[in-house]
Every structure is written in C-alpha cells, then in structure tokens.
Length: 307
Length: 293
Image (cartoon, rainbow over all chains, first blue to last red; front, side, top):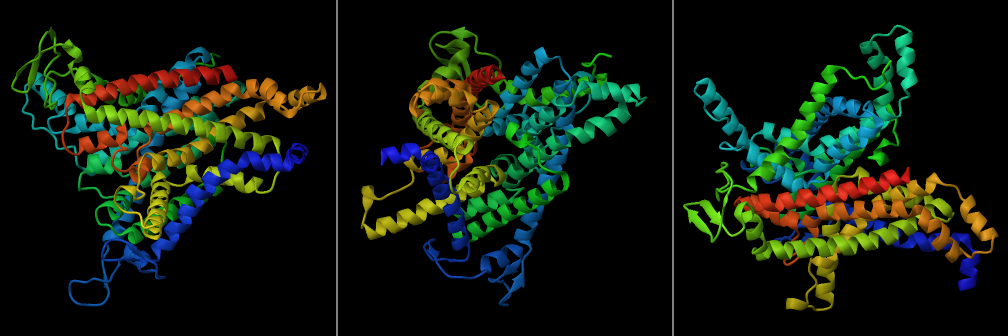
C-alpha cells in the first residue's frame, strides 16, 4: 500500500489535497447548499425550519407581502427592496470615494524611492490590520455630538469668537459612508499600488520625449496601465461593503439598515432563518453578478491575490 | 528626468489621506490615557501616582499613573477570558491551517490529480463571496446538524451539542486555508522543479527531498502564510459572530457587545494594546516578504 502510494504521483497529490477539500466542501459548499434548501422553507412557530418548497421568501424580499394590514391576500411592501437598493447605492458610493482617495496615495508610494516604499506600505497595512470593530469605535468617538470633531470645531469657533452648535453626525447615513470608506480604503490602495509599481519608468520618459504633458501622460499611460489594480480593488471593496453589518449597526444606529443588518436580524432577533437564508443568497447573487460583469468588461488582474 | 518626481498636488493628497487613516487611531490611543471615566471628552492625563483617588467620574490618582486603564483591564475577568479564547482559537487554527494549506499548495503546484481544477476554484470562493454569506452558511450547517444529532441521540441539558470554541476553531481553519495556500503557492511558483529533481537524482527519497530542499525554500512563504492566518483569526468578527456560543466570546465580539452599551477608556486601552500587537505582526510579515524577493 505504502509502496504503491510512493510510486503513484496522482494518489500523493490526492492525499495532500484531501484535508483542504474536506474543509472547502464541508464548511463552504455544503453550507451554501443548505442555505439554498432552507431558503425555500418556512419558519415554524418556535423559530425552527419546516422544509417545504416555495419561493415565498424571495418574493417577499422583492416586495410581495402576505400578511397585509387591510385584509388583502397579497399587497406590495417595498421595505426590503428599499434595503437592497440602499445597500447597492452605498456600496457604489463608497467604492467611488475609496478610488478617489486611494489613487493619489498609491501613486505616491509607487513613485517613491524604492528604499522608502516599504515604510509607506507599512503605514497602509497598520490601519488595515487594526481590528475592524476597533476602527468603527474610533469613528464613534470622533463623530459623537460631544466627540472629538465637535470639540475641536467648538474650540476653533471659540477662538474665532463665533457661536457654535455641535453637529449631529453619529447615527446618520453620512457616518456610515465615512465608516465604510475608512474601513476598506487600504484594500484599494494595495492593488492600485501593485499595478502602478509595475509600470516601467521608460514609458513615462517616452511619453515625455514625445511631447505629452503630465496630464496627457497620466490619461494615456498611467491610468490605462493601472486599471487592473482599480478593478481588483473595486472587487475587494464592493463585496465587503455590501455584506458588512457592523459599520451600519454602530455608526448608523437604527437609521441605516442594510442587507447585512437584515440578514443578521433574521438569524438572531426576528428568528426567521429561512428568510435570512434567502436574503443571504440574494446578497451573494448580487455581488457575483456585479463582479462577473465588471471583470468581464475590464479584465481580471493578478492584483487581487497580491493584496 | 527624475523618475521619483511627484507633483505637489499628489503630495498634499497623500498627507491628507494618511491623516485620514491615522487620526482615528491616534485619537483612540490618546483617549486610553483619559482621566475622565465617562470618556465623552478628554479630561487630561492622570499624572499622579499612588492609591486610587476619584472625584466624581474623574480619576485623580492611580497606582499605575497614566496607565490606569491598562491596569484596570487586567482586573476585568471578561476581557481576560476573551483574550484567552482569542489566542487559543488563533493558535490552533493557525497551526492547522498552515499545515493543511501548505499541503494543498504542494499538491496544486507539484502534482496532478483528479479534482485539481475544482480544488483551485474552491479556494477562491471565500474571496469572492461576502463573509456574512459564509458565516450564515456555517451557522445553518451547525444548527441543523446539531438539532438533528441532539434529537436522534436524545441528548439533553449539558450534553447537548451547541456552538462554542470547537465550532469557531473549525470555521477559522476553513477561512484561513485558502489564504495560506495561495501565499505558499505563489512562493512555489517562484522556483522551478530542478532543485528537487537534482536531489532525487542524487539519491534522496521524497521525504528527504522535501525536508532538505523544498521546505527550506518555501519556509518564508509558509511563515508569512502562518502570520496572515494568525492575523485573520485575531481580527475576525463576522464568522466568529455566527459560530460562537456562550463561553467562547472573543475580543472583537466582546468589544462589539460593549460598544452597544457603555464606553469606558478601558476599551481604548484594549485597542491600544491591540494596535501595538498588530504593528509588531505586520512588521514581521513585511520582513518575511522582503526576504522572499
């Protein structure tokens, strides 16, 4: 048996990959199938799952309500569709803002002297690896009505001598947007940096020699060559923004409910795992569709692994 | 032409973005030394050493001086047990994921077998689906399996299967393995098979070749994969949130629970320690990666 194994390269490979396959199938693929099966089911009175087959959870998310106030069998309730739309627009806005902030920084690091590049990268990695929850907490402290930003503004107003009423910033959609941008900014900086770093200096020199001004060089050389980084970064930012519930929970309060919050509540508070499963799969489908079309349009770089 | 020339506009933008990245973290650290217990505004540093003295909610004097909240932290039983859980989970899952992931990387890079394409694709799934979807999936799996087993085996009371440390550890291994595999695979791609073939030609068997040739070469990759897995585990909130049970609270879960109720400078002290631990790990990680090139 051992001898056969030693001679057979294929069984050696199979042996080495088996533990990984056990985890990937057991804790990823089977759970996804179970989620799918449950999403067709119904919730029992005690919060358990009754296995049936129906699309009621999906139609409910899209707006069909079966428990109407006015006695009708079915009525339209846009609540969940609004949550989906809000999540999509927030993810879109965050991604655009993140690109705008990340690009100059990535460009700066990529064109920095090679000796200093690692230090600048290190400075991007530290906020990235500081715990997610802790970073949300930092923004709670900054944005509170009696928080740091309002204190500083109040002090400035006092110096200048004008009246100052503190801004209500925490528990607003704006706070959630800032939190998302802050949380995921490093995920955009790293891939853009990776693709900018690859650009050969001779290309810039050639562009300059041929008479292109810096703006034209940027638009015709730098930007097109850094697109794989932007694409990879967009995927790395868009997907988690769609699914995160901590940022909206802690910075948005009850004002900003996203699909992540909806899913979390179905499993913990409202206790309808079947509806939560359906919402979770719709979230997955939405991110996969966006990722698919986006990568098909712009191509898919190795930058995503580099990050 | 100086290749490192950047326009002043870029420099200004860079400074502003770095400020945006660091201002919250610096604020967090400063408030860890706050003398005001309510932590709403900064009441100044605690600059008297000696037995604890308070006036209202302001700490005037502490045996630990400015580090009052750090000392206070060590007396918090919940924090201590959450720290223990976090480290236990991180160590077990890192060691397992590193071994499993390295094996997978070797298989994918050096061998041919059935299901090779499927294995490679399955490793990308955790990267392209939102974490909450994976968390929900694992929760559904465990709760359905546990409900089934509890009722068929007639388990009741304390012997019932519930979510806890084992479920968290297993889930952490699951999301760490792909990252370790991809990092080690990248390392293996970097050098060709001829080293191993030369060793074999000189009469070394496969085990000797692995330990004397392959392993030393991929060691930096394995170490950076392990550190990555360790940080991912320490940092994880979402997957842990859905797979944890009573008694297996980790630090991120504990902090999250706290933030919804009260905020004291204790949380800032905890965060400060965390930031320094992370700086150390990232520093080591960068060291290993620069050795690779």
